[in-house]
Image 1: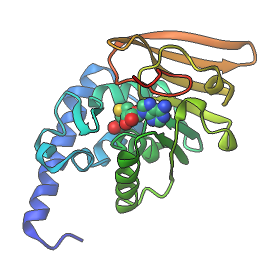
Image 2 (image 1 turned 30 degrees about the vertical axis):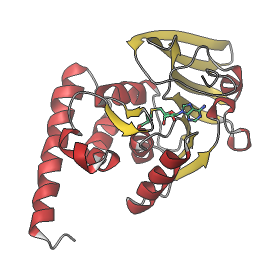
Image 3 (image 1 turned 180 degrees about the vertical axis):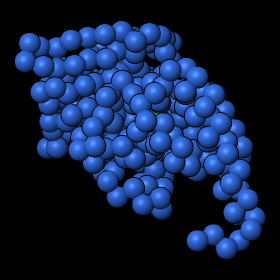
Image 4 (image 1 turned 60 degrees about the vertical axis):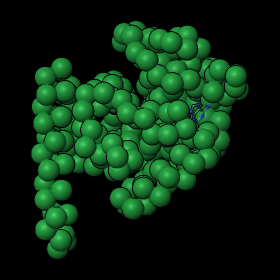
Amino acid sequence: MIENPIMKNEMIKFQRQRDEMVRRQLEARGIADPAVLAAFRNVPRHLFVSEALMDQAYGDFPLPIGEQQTISQPYIVAEMTQALELKKDDRVLEIGTGSGYQAAILAEIVFRVYTIERIHSLFVKSRRLFDQLRYHNIVTRYSDGTTGWTDESPFDAIIVTAGSPSIPQVLVDQLAMGGRMILPVGDQHSQELIRLVKDEEGIHQMNLGGCRFVKLVGEYGWKEL
Ligand code: SAH
């Protein structure tokens, strides 16, 4: 319960901005999965950026989150989430926790989210926020995500939110039968969003178009500097 009238006004303001973001940036561009749209109406995106940027949090663009990393534009988060074709009881692996926003969106939709971050300060900050917002179905880990999370595999879906030079085979190996994976693949300046499905016949790949992400740095990603 919110007793403080100033806080209550803030909440109403941000809820209004969220509803508008969903209408103008997502529905208008073809995002139609009701579970995805509901998640975007619920997750308080402004809490995933610094206080100075809160008023821009629902804009149609990415924002800096420190450590030279970014929280992706709402539309790209929605497009990737929708492309995973998630079901309620899915277990999903995310590589690149960053602000934690994408993980929170996933956590609204599926049973459990496993997310890996390689920068310690972002790992700590996002964990704290997940606890505050009571996302108890998000499991976090501080490590190089390019090798996946063997102990918890296989996953129904895997999402990589940093740009990779190629598709890491270890991640494909950690996909369940019928599993979906989405990741940006390309050079350091621009990538293609690749969607991959694993079934009895093998791996099926589809290109969803151009995108731009920060680097995936690790054993099966880019080498550090
Ligand atoms: N999903 C994030 C977007 C984060 S930007 C969000 O919703 O805010 C990409 C993140 O991937 C950065 O935080 C970066 O540190 C992280 N990253 C890059 N390479 C990684 C790796 N090998 N393992 C885990 N995280 C990685």
